[in-house]
Amino acid sequence: MTRSSLLFYALPALALAMPTLPVYVYLPAFYAETVGLGLAATGAALLVARILDVVTDPLIGFASDRLRLPGGRRKPWIAAGAVLAALALVQIFQPPETASFTHLAVWAVVLYLGWTLVAVPYTAWGAELSGDYHGRARITGAREAAMVVGIVLAGSVPALAVSQGATERDSLAMVAWIAIAVGAPTIVLLLWRVPEPPRPLSSRRLTSQGFHAWAHLFRNKPFVRLLTAWFINGLANGIPAVLFPLYLDHGLQASPVERNVLILVYFLAGVGAIPLWLRISRHSGKHRTWCAAMILACAAFIWVPLLGPGDIGPFLVICVVTGMALGADLSLPPAMQADVVDLDTLRTGRQRAGLFFAIWSMATKLALACAVGLAFPALQLAGFRAGEVNPASALLALAVIYAAVPTVLKCVAIAIVWRHPITARRQAILAV
Image (cartoon, rainbow, N blue to C red; front, side, top):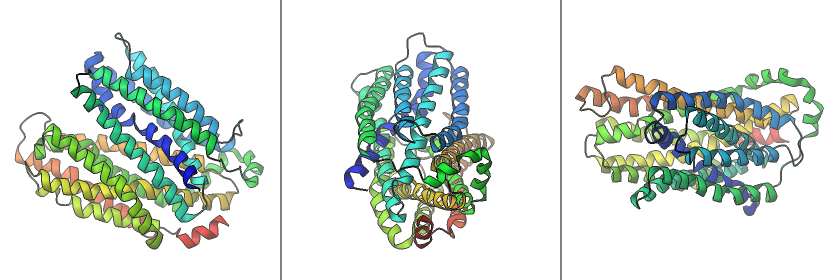
């Protein structure tokens, strides 16, 4: 890809990522407390939306592979999804004073549907933009770097707005309108300036096979190996993510300013390290480089249980190192996923990147859901209580679940992916 095409492809990820942090972090408390729906109603509405969100992933992936719409295989879905997501963002982040359970549930469903309509074809399109082993890592690296920048910006906007006297409602509306203002021109440039590869002739001949070809997904052993490692590593990343505020408040007793600095340092380290990992992967291969990054994260995280209140400096170093490892987590596995699609294409004669990346997206969402479902009950069983003074045993349990459990999970992911069979040489053969 030319640099301009790469830029136009990556930029929409910045806008797509901006609402994610507010939706997952700020939105539940906003609707439960400020809007007045209560915890039960808010949780139920968002749960319904998340269940439907998981169901739509494979459907959108399958449809974007199989249907030839005016404008291409991927572009029409992205355009439709962007419009739906923009409408839903405004309705959710700027609700009427009398917003009800139905309002939140309906527009959350529309928002997640819009995101899926964009995200699944968008990531599949990225896999098709280059058949080169290292070129794919460059594409995913640029996209994920833009995404992390969007997350950092979105996390900063509400904090800055509130510090200037804005209400929580106003700050969330501001995030929605900034995301739309950034997303509209970047989506247009994406659809206009980035070429969509033609659908392979072999794929057109075999579209009559229908859902029978789904069985080939799980006969693709490199795909199953990679998907399993991705899910386990996603769980290893998700557990500390959901426990991060609790650990800072109770384990380190960090101030709000220190918390924001630590989050910012973590994500900036992730963005800054992506070019380094891409360079290393050219010499060591993507799977071994990813393993090296996970080993680095383990080497840093293993020290967390030894920290105590006020150890902000040592934890800052840990945030830098684990943030750097995040850069590899974001950029390399999706590029490896594009390589396993080549094996499927060789075996089936079909180009099904959309379906593969839909399954990838489902695994990501399931890992995050399991992280919440496992971490919080485990803490409760250990006697930990949020917002209260906890005994030393409960604080130790918090540190162990926050850091030691993810370290073990990452070691399992490393063992699975270490012998990943698709190297640069083998991928070059598959792509011929």
